[in-house]
Length: 466
Image 1 (cartoon, rainbow, N blue to C red):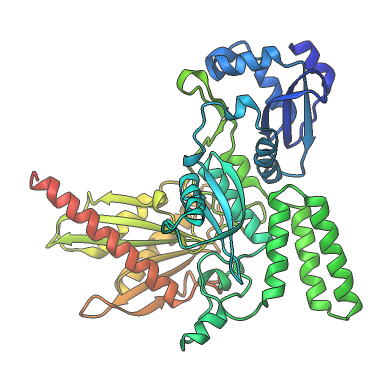
Image 2 (cartoon, rainbow, N blue to C red):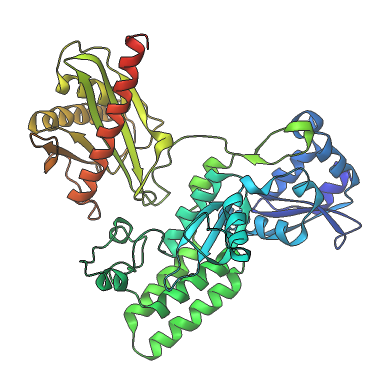
């Protein structure tokens, strides 16, 4: 196959999945890949430097192929999911040779009354499967009703799950309402419930039957059966309308609209579709092109991001500051930051906080959070307000179009035993997002303190030559 043959295929400039085949449009599948643009992606296989960028195995595949077929999708997200399902179906040699699926990620639907949606490694899945056949103890506390994958790139998978969860909220960690009641405890909605990413399993707002329907929707979406999924949702909407259940019908209508307008801008940013040449040229595929923190999608909705800051020192010595990040209720440890304090040489936590915040805000490539959480009382809160106001004025004076108007600021006040006592909320930068309560602020503050103590201890060891 050559470039002249490719031009005749008229590949579209849309997302989708492509097949390199031998023996015509219905022939043997040699390789399957996903693309943001089918036209540009397939064309890249005929570049002059192919052997350098892709390896000999892919060059051999392109040489043997006689045609390329494709399936268009409505979004990059759907192309990502469909690629995995098709590779599992066809097992093309050039996708599977030399790969150890034990290290890849899988999505698991657990076997429970209210199934969880989990990400597990292939080796964990294998151990769990083996434990069913023997008396061995399972590696994880789950049995599964379905699995999807493998997915080689963890960042892409987690980004996909973020997008899917906005359309189909699911349970991952919280304890079902009935189980909490049976244990004699008081049910409390989880954080994801407060931001709309859990359908209310923990708060009793969804029945077992309703949740089972949600899980089925997720299953169909992962299998690439969007047409069947949409048809089922439309039938449900009509049934609710006939029963005059207009609220339920409206919720399904919103889901259908979300499916029709999937905002996967963050996947586009992560999936730059650069290629790698692995050991012996046996593997080629897309890799993540950036490690930037994607904070919001095109509609300004996206990820709920919280950043917390703390200062640690010993009588002013070896002073450090830290930033910890929580996204959609999960600590994003790969985004934690450490700051060696450079301008403060005494026990002045407020001045150190100013330095840390100024240095953090100098990184315009980092996404702004929904809330800044700082450690301290009114003095620290005042200092943080001044830094944020200064940054906002600077951007306005420079004519930059950066939205800081939706950013909130709080400080967590500790007691004599360094336990969280209360949360002070800024009036200049009020928290406008209802899902962020005092408990969440205290939780991330505790994590920032833990991280600050660990970073300080390490710096002290270095200073002492240990």
